[in-house]
Amino acid sequence: MIAKPTQRLHPKAKKAWQIRGLVGLLFYTLLVGAYFVSRIWLTFLPWWPGLMAGGFFLFVSMISIFVFPAVRMHYWGYDIREEDIDIQSGMIVIKRVLIPMNRVQHVDLEYGPIMRHFNLASLVITTAGSNHKIPAIAQDVALELRKDIARLVYENEDDV
Amino acid sequence: MSNPKRQHPMMILTGVIAQLKGLIWPIVLVLLARTLGSNPDEPFFDRFTLIITGVTLGGTLLFSVLRWLFFTYRYDHDIIEIKSGVFIKKERKIKRERIQAISLDTHVILKYLGLTSLNVETAGNLNEAEVKINVLTLLEATQLKQTLQHNGQPTEDAPSAPPNMVEVDTNTLFLAGLTSGGVGVMSLGVLFFGFQIFGIINAVTVDFKTTWQLVLAAMIALFLVLLLGWILSIIKYVLQYAAFTLQRENQELTITRGLIRKKEVVLSLDRVQAIQLIQGLIRQPLGYLTIEAKVAGARSDDAVSATVLHPLIHEREVPAFMASLFPQYVLPQTMTSSPKRARVRYLFRASWFYVLLTPMYFFVPQALFILLLWLPSVALAVLKHRAAAVSLSEDQLTLRYRNVAKSTLLVPRHHIQALTFQANPLQRWRKLKDVGLYVLSAPTPTYASVRDLELSVTDGLYEAFAHRKEADPLKTEAST
Image 1 (cartoon, rainbow over the protein chains, first blue to last red):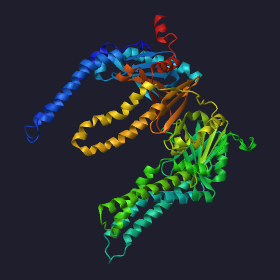
Image 2 (image 1 turned 180 degrees about the horizontal axis):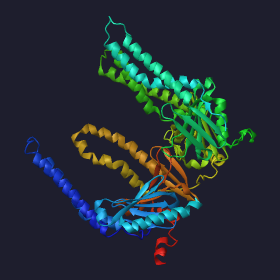
Image 3 (image 1 turned 180 degrees about the vertical axis):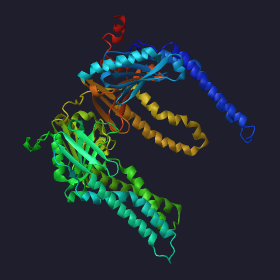
Image 4 (image 1 turned 60 degrees about the vertical axis):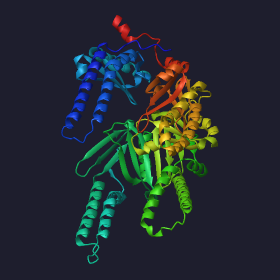
């Protein structure tokens, strides 16, 4: 067995994902609510699709609030080494990706409103053929990592 | 630097033709509308139509003349400069070292006039498109190409009869076309046109006495369609790859092919990211395969089609081919296959869909016919499992896998953009893992993977590629 990557995501990430799940739940509730309200005028609409969709959305939201964040926190991790970047991701299918440092083209920082509130950011690493994401790490760490990667890429350039 | 030159005046004519080509469908549509709604008393071509046609033709001609007039190019051994544009002027200079590929594209009609067109392709910057000189004499084109390629020194001085040359004869090409599997697409084409024709000559409807006759007729028709589709696909293939030659001179590959449209593409070797040996289901028992290259930064169609390095080669000739043209690539003698116990997973992947459909069989007994598809997919799964293998040499990772055709992908280590390992819960339980990699290719990057390898094998690959032994630079940095 290969050891897990040493660096973990930021502990606050769990909370951020849970809030995102809640926002999703709110949105779905509005959607289902709108369906039932519209039945007041559109009387030909049956009640059961609304209930089914509602149940489905509730189920999805519950999972994405109580299950997914914890599972994600458990599996996700990364290492940034002299010559390569190592990311482990996934919840059911666990994926490990190795990106040689001299293949990295650019590194982007991404964050939405929730992530920003928690001072978190995602790091997106782009090679000429693919891109890979390290989600939810502290913003200052992300900035630091980006700088480090840029330096390492520069240093590795010579021995292509 | 040479004086600014214009393209050959034939450019005006080809320009007009190219423009008119784009107008063909509107014209057909208008003509159709007129014939359908025509009044026998009116002349077919009234004044209005004539004026419109005249203006369009005149405008096209004028525009083509202007375009020819304003397009000039000049070059010397390290730069090519092009000025163009009727209303919006454009000037473009391309330095020699920015040039990735120069290709000649000769249409059969132009060929008889001793003319050709030339494409200069630069490194893949999207908004810096390639340069195309549409019509120039063959002499001029070869001269230009040689000047830009060889730093002004004509190649005649180089030792002739290069050993690194591959030609493909027509018999081989015919066999390639025969086994190319382009039947499906062509048959669809034939079928489409068949329906069109039958739609028109509806009068020829035969009175079928019995359903038996109808079935027979349908089968004969289907057979004819497939046969015709097959023949057409062979012809298309042979025309496409006729006179195929591949030549390597130092770091440059030259590929020429085509009969009606002769194509010549030159690309530098370092753009070749990986080499793929592809063996289709029909070709496998015959021992033949196709060799293709994954080429980086190619955006034009020319370069994409240039990726075929050999349309059809016998297995036993592959080592010699690779050794003479691509000595830096290794054909692995032994590969580590997916373990026997993984076969069940391949069978599972081929079967779960049909199992899921089980309730349907009870409600719709006819659906049992779907199970006829299950057998071939199980057979394919066995073949897929047999193909799955990897091999790692000092600086090359080789993946072998099968979708329908069997592929062996030879990737030099430093061309791997990213290496991936993955496993779902079932695989984790069986201690199996998939290995995949990204490599640059045209028009989109390639992701190739081998499924269900022994965990010890994939862990070995991980250790070989990850530089874990060294201390984490970030940690050491933090401690100092």
